[in-house]
Image 1 (cartoon, rainbow, N blue to C red):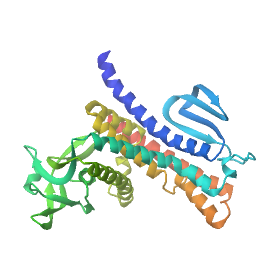
Image 2 (cartoon, rainbow, N blue to C red; image 1 turned 60 degrees about the vertical axis):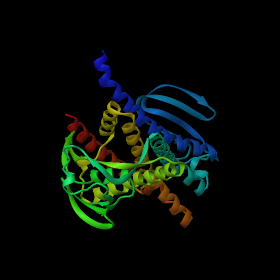
Image 3 (cartoon, helix red, strand yellow; image 1 turned 120 degrees about the vertical axis):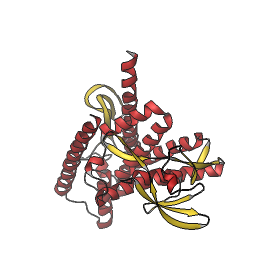
Image 4 (cartoon, rainbow, N blue to C red; image 1 turned 90 degrees about the vertical axis):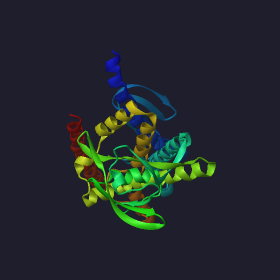
Length: 343
């Protein structure tokens, strides 16, 4: 039984972490709606068949069988309503606040987790080479005390940026820009590649220096890492559009749960890092102006605010439906890819 539990519990923890991120997002919409006096018909934890629930005020709180998400259903959000407290009968600014609240909560969650990570570290990492592993190959080009300024053209400001830059590389030779003896130079640095779950990635074989923590230094590092995490999202989208990565390199819920469960088996720090990245990712990605996402609703509301008229309901419904079909299709492809990688 203990052997089975050792295999199962990391997956359970991963699913709960993923569910937490979704609930924080939907909770943001719910709290904002109530602040704007918008009627919330239902707040659901999980999807699928209803297990149990209770009603408080005008809102039905339900717990459903599948812990793979949740939703906040507001009066007049997707249909006509004569209720004065419906979503569609509130001002543009009020609706904008409700629409972006979910993403904002995810970003705040990411910032808080990063704060926990940085605050519990013994040192604050800086992008300066301190030493190498015993069998390191990067020492053929890098030297101790090299300050890393860029990786493959991506500017480096924190130690986190070093990991990001290396994760974007597709082969063993990576172009570094370093500051050495006061001179900035470009060098090609060799690395060994590791493969896991069908994905090849660079095996980091050097260490970086760390500074002693101060209050100012911790605050600065928290926000620097938060900006780095945000940049990862935009770089990932740019890399996908630019062809650096393909659809097979994307991860859906299955791949995400697999990654988090692997981190659970190793250390808490890895779990926190992945959870923070996921939370920031979901927050920012939802603000992209793509149909079926919060960003598209935001775009439609900005259009309404500028031109003083709403997009025709049939057109908006058709655009949202097309976007949803595309996202569901992409999710199916990515999930199939995730399952293939597992086996």
